[in-house]
Image (cartoon, rainbow, N blue to C red):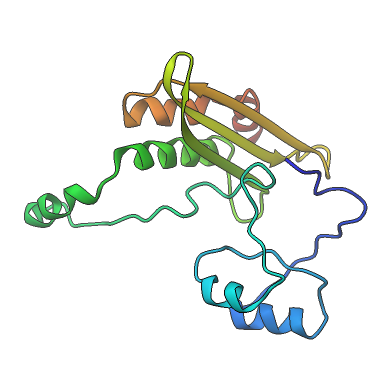
Length: 176
């Protein structure tokens, strides 16, 4: 990951809907802004300066880009009809990412990212989980962790995310 705490960058809060944020950029209030890619495709095509970050450069927040469907538990007909849309590898990856967020006490005020992807390795197919967060004791310091393992169930994926960080247990103790 790139060092976003480098002195050439100054990170500032930016509030408002997409139009407001883009207007602030156009007015010169910001040299550049970072936005979620979802919903920006038409704007990005018309704007030559728009670029997407690869996860190697900047990890996304947990669960970004995944869609979820929620159905009432008493509607088995809908559950059955929608079951083919449940992509188990994506579900496992998101489960691991969200477990990192829960283990770390993630919130809107905590800089935290998690990204899981399936990779073929020497030990077969593995879920590779990377996470990064700001150290609350040392502002400006970024803590990163990475782990890959075989995952055969959603509970395996959740356990990977929950236990994937040596800092998670310390963070949980600090919160209690």
